[in-house]
Amino acid sequence: MAIIPHTALWAAIVLLFSTLCTAKTVTYDFNVTWVTANPDGLMERKVIGVNNQWPLPVIEVEKGDQLVVNMHNGLGDKNASIHFHGMYQNGTNEMDGPIMVTQCPIPPGADFVYNFTVNQNGTYWYHCHADYCYPDGYRQALIVHDTESYFYDQYEEEFTVTVSDWYHELVEGIAPDFLSVYNPTGAEPIPQAFLFNDTLNTNLVVKPNTTYLIRLINIGAFVAQYFYIEDHTFTIVEIDGIYTEPTEADTLYIAIAQRYAILLTTKNTTDKNYPIVTVADSALLDTIPSDLRLNLTNWLEYNADADHPQAVMTVDDATDLVPYDDFTLTPYDKMPLLPEPDYTLELSVNMEILGNGEGYALLNNISYTAAKVPTIFSVMSSGSLATNELVYGEFTHPIVLEHNDVVQVILNNNDGGSHPFHLHGHAFQVIDRTPSYGASFYSYVDGDPVPYNASNHTAFPAYPARRDTFVLPPQGHFVIRFVADNPGVWMFHCHIDWHLSQGLGMLFIEAPTQMQERLNIPQNHYDVCKTGGIPSEGNAAANTMDYLDLKGQNTQVGWLPGGFTARGVVALVFSCVSAVIGIAFLVVYGLSDLKFKGREEEGMGEGGKVGGKGVGKATVMEASRENSGEEVK
Ligand SMILES: *[C@@H]1O[C@H](CO)[C@@H](O)[C@H](O)[C@H]1NC(C)=O
Ligand SMILES: *[C@@H]1O[C@H](CO)[C@@H](O)[C@H](O)[C@H]1NC(C)=O
Ligand SMILES: *[C@@H]1O[C@H](CO)[C@@H](O)[C@H](O)[C@H]1NC(C)=O
Ligand SMILES: *[C@@H]1O[C@H](CO)[C@@H](O)[C@H](O)[C@H]1NC(C)=O
Ligand SMILES: *[C@@H]1O[C@H](CO)[C@@H](O)[C@H](O)[C@H]1NC(C)=O
Ligand SMILES: *[C@@H]1O[C@H](CO)[C@@H](O)[C@H](O)[C@H]1NC(C)=O
Ligand SMILES: *[C@@H]1O[C@H](CO)[C@@H](O)[C@H](O)[C@H]1NC(C)=O
Ligand SMILES: *[C@@H]1O[C@H](CO)[C@@H](O)[C@H](O)[C@H]1NC(C)=O
Ligand SMILES: *[C@@H]1O[C@H](CO)[C@@H](O)[C@H](O)[C@H]1NC(C)=O
Ligand SMILES: *[C@@H]1O[C@H](CO)[C@@H](O)[C@H](O)[C@H]1NC(C)=O
Ligand SMILES: *[C@@H]1O[C@H](CO)[C@@H](O)[C@H](O)[C@H]1NC(C)=O
Ligand SMILES: *[C@@H]1O[C@H](CO)[C@@H](O)[C@H](O)[C@H]1NC(C)=O
Ligand SMILES: [Cu+2]
Image (cartoon, rainbow, N blue to C red):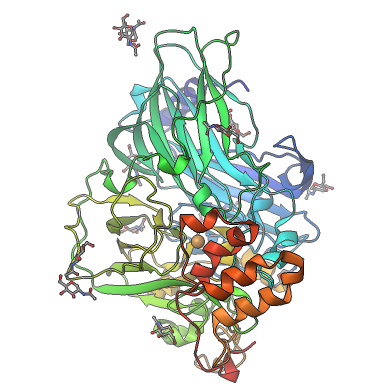
């Protein structure tokens, strides 16, 4: 695929508008409907298109622009919304997109206007933020061009490239097998393919001895990807919209929702084309089907007539690569370490089997369960009670933050998988992270989880890296800081869509009093609630009389009854289905102490592979809590 140079075009636009000296309004009309596409060449399937097209349009704006997206939900059978990932939505929390958090789902047939000022620069993306939605294709890049960036005069052209995983079935079709008693280990569905800019076999056509800006975005649902270009190094200049000190690197690890912008200077010679290699992180996959291609070769094309060679494996496994450690990147603005926090929150990630035998994800024992009223409307309608966490219910996991507090979040991972955590409304400083970096950093290693110890940590960086999505390593932890200077309801969640559907998220209710003073929610938002039959006032239980009475609130599934352990459920389920799946399970589950044995177990038969990792995940803590009737749905 040939690349259209944008620089000249943008230079012209900039000239035009800088003479007029006004920020412009950029309007997109999105008629969202089902279309078909076959991006991996393996299967044509239904995907969510915009204006009858897929891949979706890349949204392109400049800092200061007013972005308006008029969305029509023409899907007929599905709720939808749009989250503009990484946009701070400062003063426009209602435009953030997650359904039942900052808006009602947009029902089939309804229209919704997203309208906000873009006050930041760099590489972002947009995606549906309704249940089981964006992996069906409703996701694409959002670029904020910046003619004043420190590297603007260092490149000639720019490319935007997305990477993603790809399923052949609709997410809604996969979900029932994922959230099922037959999948107590919570093994995530394995994609059928991986895509490079929503296609395969692409050429980035380049001239010799020329510098390019390449924007990379993982818009997938689940799997992180390694990225490198054979025989080339490059310079990292931006992560998640934050400019970094120029930093040379040869390999990146791009987790779901993360972005990198790199400068690449081409060689002097044009006799060869070079593979651009992306490799899916197999550490995340419980099984690797023999027909799943983990790596893709695309090309830096110097010469259309020359060979386009396939990538040559340089290591046994991509997990042996050591990608550049984003923790060590320094923001270009050298924003210093935030002061000691006014508020500290310590959280633990656990994967558990709850009372219905299905696998859930929990933060401090809470599996995020949406309220009956989008939380933003509970803030707006609860008057002086808005600062009381009770209003928002127990299972949205609400934390009320005071305006301008320095907030520190400690996230401990009791799970054997890695989780790319995303905070809406902010970029955060990453001030600590364990274990230490190296090959296989993103893979499970045998041993016990290592929680943060405030009296024994490495010195915090003077100028910590900032981004909006950061990977929580298996059984390790990270510590982040941010200032609560953006009044709004902001979700903090794992961006693996499967884990979010298992409840791996929570809400920060930031400066609710200031929200009430400043937000001006358009009538259109209330109309959409009405159309969908969802209340737009009241507490989490939709109670408008007594905001502290949560009777009838949505609750997470209750704990396993006393005496039943997660281990018991796994054994029970697998002995029931053992006729189908094979005796291997009984051996594995009956004899093991249910701690994930790491790499050895991956070498076992089919059964061992399916269960190995997941069981470790699901039984870090044996559920022994009494089943209180009230908690059961
Ligand atoms: C959206 O697209 C569909 C399919 O092309 C068309 O039938 C419908 O009229 C369009 N709706 C709007 C509001 O443009
Ligand atoms: C849309 O969401 C509402 C509220 O959650 C739900 O009742 C309704 O069934 C959903 N509609 C569709 C088409 O999924
Ligand atoms: C978008 O918001 C701006 C600022 O509030 C307002 O002036 C403008 O009319 C809005 N545009 C649309 C299409 O709603
Ligand atoms: C956007 O870029 C400009 C120029 O490079 C810089 O001055 C400004 O601080 C950036 N804005 C944000 C929000 O990063
Ligand atoms: C990637 O896809 C988008 C959307 O189709 C397109 O605008 C962009 O030019 C493509 N990038 C490359 C490098 O081909
Ligand atoms: C490469 O480009 C640089 C700067 O544009 C120039 O100084 C240099 O002579 C070029 N080298 C070759 C071999 O073209
Ligand atoms: C480009 O060509 C110049 C002059 O021939 C040479 O000195 C330089 O090393 C070359 N650079 C690269 C990246 O090949
Ligand atoms: C890519 O995958 C193929 C088959 O799946 C394998 O033979 C090859 O070694 C891999 N290459 C790289 C660079 O990972
Ligand atoms: C979670 O529940 C377990 C078992 O009841 C308990 O031991 C643990 O302290 C709880 N953790 C938190 C953070 O509440
Ligand atoms: C302090 O932390 C280091 C690194 O995690 C660990 O090796 C050491 O055992 C810890 N020391 C104490 C006293 O906990
Ligand atoms: C935390 O570190 C301190 C000081 O190094 C050590 O004394 C203490 O035992 C550690 N706590 C835990 C729970 O490991
Ligand atoms: C939001 O805007 C206020 C000024 O109105 C500013 O002080 C604050 O830093 C901004 N926060 C973010 C996250 O952009
Ligand atoms: Cu996750």
